[in-house]
Image 1 (cartoon, one colour):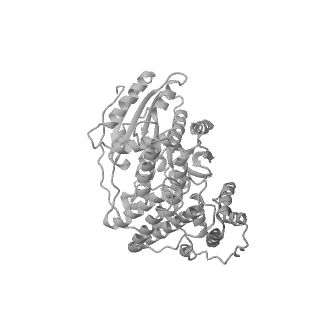
Image 2 (tube, rainbow, N blue to C red; image 1 turned 45 degrees about the horizontal axis):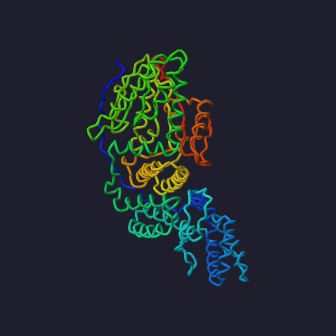
Image 3 (tube, rainbow, N blue to C red; image 1 turned 90 degrees about the horizontal axis):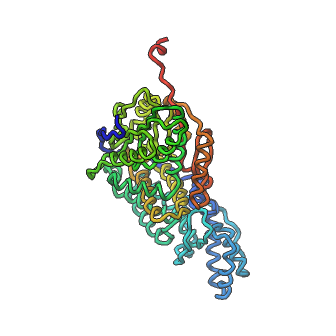
Length: 529
């Protein structure tokens, strides 16, 4: 094979189909789940305190009406010393500051049934016309007005109520609730925080209600080129893909130590962003670089471009410039399970690495095809299988459970994006994530491919499929920590988890990286003993 093999092995695509959505009745989420949602959206209030907070807000409104303008002016000047995200203490502080003779009412017995959460005391103006200062996510230090805080809490609750109606199959009620949600969105800052992520979930719910999965709704597909553009901006805007690439490259580099002929099989080549760093690292390897073969899998181009070949030519030029012998093969496939082992042309003399960055979860649909793919990966006997996946559970059978988990997860994801300053990358990165949200919420059956599962589930699945865990060493951890220094935003954290690495925002892991080695299958002679 020459320095560049331009052959493309097309794999037959398969059409998407959809199945009907779940319609079983589910109780509203328990208070502890709602507490997690509220906390994830940045609100320092518990679900069992909301009625008390509402009474205090009503009382504060009455007091402010009776107060002189000068008193209110002094209150506003002093209010900056309080934390307005802690609603209860914030309201009490303002009442004390006004120095009125009105007594704050005693707490009333609280009904923890969240189905009545929307019934705030009569006369309370929950739709204030005030515009809050821009808030950057759940850990923002900027002030938010209590009235906007209240509207945001109502937004979360109505989202959950609408999702419950969708699960029951009550699309008429869900449609009415979407109208309420649109009205609520007009009263919060939709440029950040729960206003932004809420708008994406409202849009997804609206699409699902209008185009029910029972009628075969599928997500509008982008061209391969359009998807590459969004992917690139997501890569530039935040550290998640960079963390995946750096961690995988370090593990692959260590697995290839001492090997003269190595073969990387990339399950999602995209723009080849991961591989320049590995090529340069191999060029500096003591004793000289090995022969590097790279097989890149990607979707066929709809615009006549041979994008896989174009990427391969660029990587070949880079490899030549640093004296690394290099060969490339592109495999065009609409779906990963369309790929067959013979297309990869693996030689028994090669040390093989299989690289899957946020791809295996797409094989968890009906079937599921994941079992067949893991089986032929094991047959390749790779020295390392690198798996990076979203650290969340969006593959639950019940729609409401899936919706609740995704609302919490993507609220945290958008919070971390708000802390990044890259523009315009951030705006297009948000569109990339919005498509994930739409797929999780709108689609069912084989059309729903964003079936993320947490690390603990992947451990179980890969172990049962004949793979043994490889410990990601200290070098991978150090590289991941160094990567975060490139981002000025504080809040990202790298953690070690039983030999795996996770990258998260504050205390919430968002993606997990793990490495695996195939356990050779027993030979027929051994099995016959």
